[in-house]
Length: 144
Length: 115
Image (cartoon, rainbow over all chains, first blue to last red; front, side, top):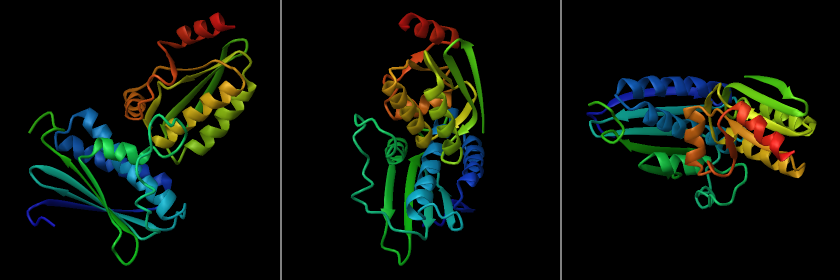
């Protein structure tokens, strides 16, 4: 972890009704950092989709669990770490599907990979998963 | 979320979800949309002007609506997409998958023409 980074932490219950709180936080943060409204919407969507996947797949819809988020800001990058304590994903199964296969479901991972510069999963922890996504700030901001 | 439903012409149903279309609200909207697709006689229009946020589950239910409509050979059009909705359609590369009308009046006209 970068000791010089500004750091934010947020912990939310694994209930879909609280995803709006998460979006509000990221919307405010990204706007204050000078992200364009377009990039603010995109990055907020990527984080929302990641947490929605945790609720649906990691916690199998159990709304009584916890999702811990850490945001790290360096001059160059925005990094978002999403920690859950649920079922580890099968990394082979969460590859984005072919978009020409038009059907409900499976788009969240595609959105995350399309929007963010990197998306990595650490499944080596004793319990759960640490998802790390990064976005270069210089390409997202309308002002320094 | 609230869903406004009206009929501007006999047999043409206009469905207008308001607020957020995400995994929290989609189950209720899915139920409403399916019922309205089954009830509509000439066509169904989904007005998205008041959707402030939509996620992948929101677009999934719009795809389901289209498939239910195709099962009834019923015209199914989207209109008045907000930037949030447009962004998700583009990310999913589905902007050409749906029939998107310029306005509700345009959508009604297309359905009448197809009848």
